[in-house]
Image (tube, rainbow, N blue to C red):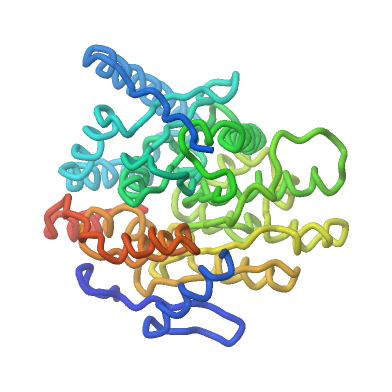
Length: 411
């Protein structure tokens, strides 16, 4: 039985010596941070009218609705999906006070630069979340949202982007084609192209090109690490020109991700992401190994690539039923055996959405958020001192609604 949602749950860290509890978490963050251990013009401020913002929101709503109906035609409207869609609707309504506040800032905050085009395919755009303080170059997080490879969207990263911007971190949230608009190869290609754009252009927005981090959540964690590994293999093989290098990424953050599709396909089928649909997304059963990073890094032909990769830092809740935390545990073990540097933080009793939505909506101290910020600001004593004095984040949703949402969540 999960612990009460408002009680601080212990954080455990997986290491070669076993599981470490929350009493060591501060020391763990310090050790991890130590390992990771001409002024640029500010981008022009956005000048958009209220009418244009409303028009943009309507266009996005139309796009998502159209893709939703296309998806339903692919899935069929069976009992299981009716139940899940109903639960999703109730879940969204319960958390609506938080969503409305985030949506307002997303559309009207001067810190957000929306719809920056990075490629020539549909949905090849990204959003930037910029700090108000522009006194020096800022660390950068390239974020890839989840959504079961079906409903991912760049605005899902708005809450994280806005909160990190308050801590002097630039966030680039990349949109990409989802199924049925595209399959996994299209998604990986889009994300790789988006990463390339950020690496080349983020200095114009005050970003530090020596402190760029890649982060994915859920399906976004899977897609981004696929793009990351694919890029490393291209560079090692020198088979074709590359637009960006894995050496430009300081570390990879994976939140609640799945990295071995062969182990997950039956689990997904039991939860409503039917096997036939999943295989369509992943381009057939024969491609599951290719798009399973845990399997691919064990390929002897690329064993020299893995040790040269930047650090991996994975985060997962032990109460996650959408993607069990064992997915991150085994991936970290496999990375280490292959010679990569990898760390794992497990959160006792946390579900798939606790870490990404419910906890940030709750406000106050957020262990995951603080751990990420401590890594991003590693080596910057001024930023770390400022972090230590930062006020607790405000509550966005009443506790009773968060608890009810947690009960009905379909994730």
